[in-house]
Image 1 (tube, helix red, strand yellow):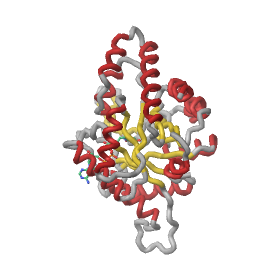
Image 2: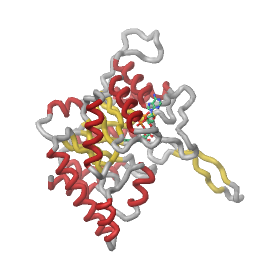
Image 3: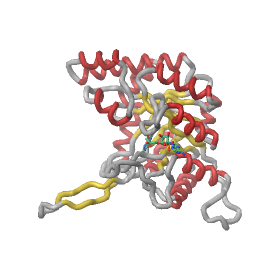
Image 4: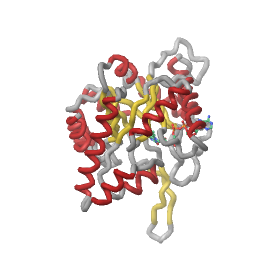
Length: 316
Ligand code: FAD
């Protein structure tokens, strides 16, 4: 079932979770162990992130370095199918522009369609680790909106080989990313919102936000979206804080702020176990307020802490 149908048929706020594929070398069982406590909470859908290949330098026996390409977390599409089979829940694979030519993208979408997956979160992806700015593949997409338009084409039965006849129309429900604290490359919030509006006008069914720790920023973002005519559901993305290192890592990686009250509480903590308690309490308070405000879905980035997230959702 499509995410948008879950939202349109819901009688209250839904819950969804986001997971990463296991590191290469780990079996799917590690993923099931992560998901088991979460599935008890009957999520409406599970998102699975996409991780592109990276260039790394490997030291050789003679002391020189060799540049190799590694993909640390492969398998997004097949993981989605496995989760659907095992838990009978809808899944949302993330699909990015980075590393994909338009032909690779079409093949990936055809595979998802064969696997019975009706949802996709379309994203640009970040710059590769060896690059300072995002560079599309030769014959690849530069922005998420270009990828979105390719999904639209396939939904209309238009494949890259234009002479194909009687083609199957896919029926992907399309989500896109939004940034309550602005995407780090956008010159200002207004410009970023205009590009977001273009994604919605091009056919995005809903928006999922980058994580935020201050609900006021989400509410202001939703108001700003509504003011410029973005009327699709805006799903808040939430993540627990569970160690002190995140005080610097989260702002650095995700270009977000942590509120002063939260950072002050974390700095007082004597151990990471204490931080986890503070993080859980904060996440619960955020979730309760958002639910009271009638958000369509509470979407949790569970990465590394499924039990913490499960405990918070149980208390909602
Ligand atoms: P876009 O919408 O293409 O925007 C990128 C930047 O370009 C923005 O600054 C925007 O303002 C600007 N822009 C947009 N359109 C235009 C245009 N036509 N002309 C000029 N400027 C334009 N990354 C992964 O690699 N894998 C994942 O699984 C993943 N999951 C994510 C899930 C969520 C909910 C979120 C919020 C992010 C996720 N990301 C993931 C990270 C994401 O790929 C990065 O944030 C990336 O830098 C931007 O992606 P986007 O889809 O928002 O890009």
